Image 1 (spheres, rainbow, N blue to C red):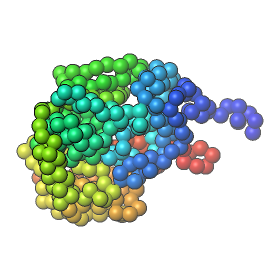
Image 2: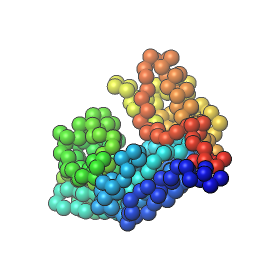
Image 3: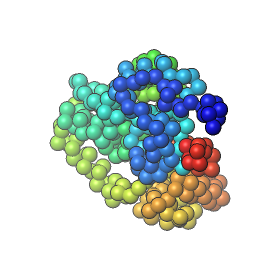
Image 4: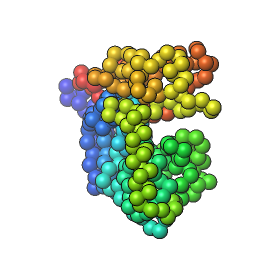
Length: 318
């Protein structure tokens, strides 16, 4: 027994540098995803701020993978969980500040709160953010958009940490924006951004935000366990229409279901697993491809390991 223990693999958390934030082993990510599914993070790191995260990236062992999540709104974490360190940007990344016609926000700030702060400052043009569930970091990463606008149209600059913890400020050309995508390296971490609007009346801005909220309430299952829009709209097509035409409205796999209210939303109606949701999405893609010849592309980010591939330690899922 002692010989076996002597050769035991060291715990990841013991190999990581000291931080001012919080490191936790085995936190279930189902608690922080909007689908309410997903396995554990090997180690969950909630940095105290940009400097804490930068120092961690500088000092961590090079073989340790890092995955970043926000509020888990457009995310499907597989049932086997995520190896390495999962960074969740929280309180140290939620500041929002208005200067002139510009709004600066941390990557952990909710898109809705940025829209509301712009309203209070009399800055128009950012109302569309109120219709996007999630945080500014995710919005920058995927060039999030809704209601005839997107991040690229209001973008001023972004602050990003590279894999070694060096801070960079990127301009629009360096972002490489395309539809629902930015070209920034996947291992770079957005920590904040700035957005330019126009001077406008706060009451008029408020009315537009209310209109967006009403439209969302009427057309989307926003009170269900969902991950937002599931598939990217193909050029010249609406994903929901392709899905509906393929007979997928209300389609189920276990407790995973294609929303009857909006076909481009998958929902967890009870105790669906991540595998149920992903499998249902793939079945939708197959049916759309068979009927229309169009290949739907996932907009929801799927990360982690399937349950069957989860490592086993001491008889328990790692």
